[in-house]
Amino acid sequence: MARLHRTVIVLAIASLCVLPAAAVSAAEVTGSARVLDGDTIEIGSTKVRLFGIDAPEGAQPCKDAARKNYPCGDAATARVRQLTAGKPVTCKGDQTDQYGRLLAVCSVQGKEINGTLVRDGLAWAFVKYSRAYVAEEQEARRAKRGVFAAENITPWDFRAGKWGTAEKDALKEGCVIKGNVNRKGEHIYHLPWQRDYSKINMNKGVGEKWFCNEGDAEKAGWRRAAR
Image 1 (cartoon, rainbow, N blue to C red):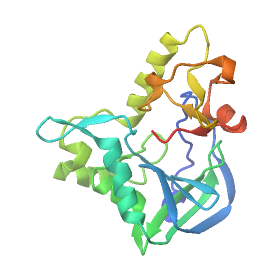
Image 2 (image 1 turned 60 degrees about the vertical axis):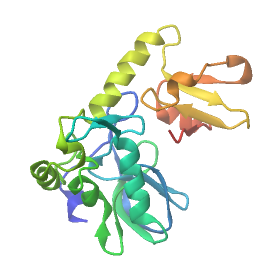
Image 3 (image 1 turned 90 degrees about the vertical axis):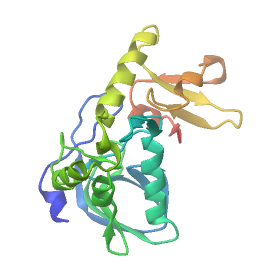
Image 4 (image 1 turned 135 degrees about the vertical axis):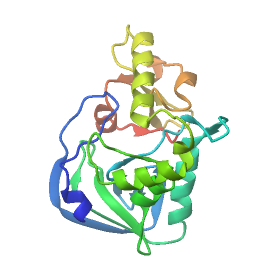
């Protein structure tokens, strides 16, 4: 828990506005994890955002040491699945973000997930909000592991670029998050940096809506797309 008290942190959200994280009583959750992406999991009804790190987005490409593109977001997600598969995961934190996700350090059988991802070159230290994993990133950079084997764009810059492009394309709507209703009637929202975003053609006639931030989408009953 020492890492959690080094910095008051907030998460970058889709709208690129920064809102303060809320302090809560120290929380600990343990159980099997459903992996949502490279830095977000769900244990039971608790959504957990891994504290102090930022993993590549699912649709984000990176270059390896040979300068060849590879899906680094998928690689990060796969590693979290590998670390957590069939094992109880314990997450400890004392803050939540504006979506109610617990900001936490998570571990499996004594092995910390947050630091492992950065050390293996599968995530960046989220230095805008915490310096907890700077040493792990420096180690990964020296060894040229994963995303640090070449010059790669950070996830926050990748999201910002996608958001800016989406804003230009959606001037008429004013908001850029697509609240889609799929063939099963499920309400799913898509962010500009997600893989299927450009494939979604909005149809207000079936109840599809545009949202300006993830919080509004969640409150309206939409859930985030898996990719």
